[in-house]
Length: 322
Ligand code: UFG
Image 1 (tube, rainbow, N blue to C red):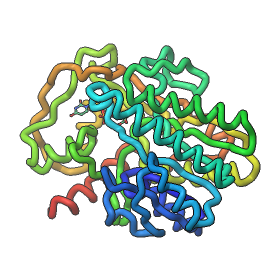
Image 2 (image 1 turned 90 degrees about the vertical axis):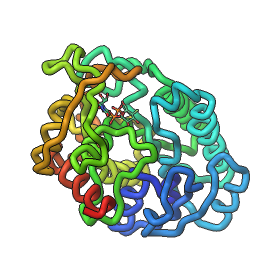
Image 3 (image 1 turned 180 degrees about the horizontal axis):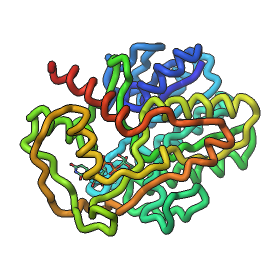
């Protein structure tokens, strides 16, 4: 049995589905503060907080072999306003989870890390051995967990894989689950809101960056490709693989303007695009070198930006009744 924390959220629910398709049994642990009960269509939902001592009840009730840990807050902007909240929820609560795992002899852990641990990278594409210099409390909280995982592995009888996601995007192609944040801050769903007229326009946060069209470049990776990487990482640990850290990106960068153009093409809709000020804490370019996970775990992403936007558009039409 695999425990999927945060399995009612965006990436967690897609991975939970993929685990079931691959034949695994899961128990989803989620306090539903950000997740959605109806995203847990596979396995059993247990409503717990990972920071609580009641967590032991779940480890008593189920025979847990490993943990895939998604539960956490994800907003960079919110983390800047409320750093303590991120320290508590993302770092301290994970320490509690690790403690309980140790008590119950659960020795396999897959961790949702982030490209935000790199801060403003010195070179592009980014390799895993680049300097880790997070520039916001969100990235810092994930970096702290990575450090705690190193210490935990050094103690023995514990192995982990930390996966540093670049820009998770797209949705389940069956339309059963999708991306739904409240409030939404991510580029693609916001553009699609503009495409359906739910917003007047899409704002580009700065067009004076040192990039070809002046807008920020990101590496968009389909959520199902992320899900697949979690399964490969889990199986790697089951096969005695040693603790490791991997980037997860497509390896190709797209500017904000290019993503907007792709959304116009896929939806066939036109909408207004306005340029706003830069958003604080946005690096100009984040593009992954994912060759390590490709070579070591045999992971290959399947979906390009067009497929990402097509799947997001399908979901967006469904939830907006179009
Ligand atoms: N952007 C706009 N307009 C918008 C929204 C976003 O121009 O209305 C721009 C942003 O400035 C950025 C790009 O679109 O350049 C992508 O922004 P997102 O908010 O979709 O994603 P981020 O790159 O900021 O953040 C993502 C994850 C974070 C993670 C980070 C790692 O959401 O959790 O990648 O770098 F920390």
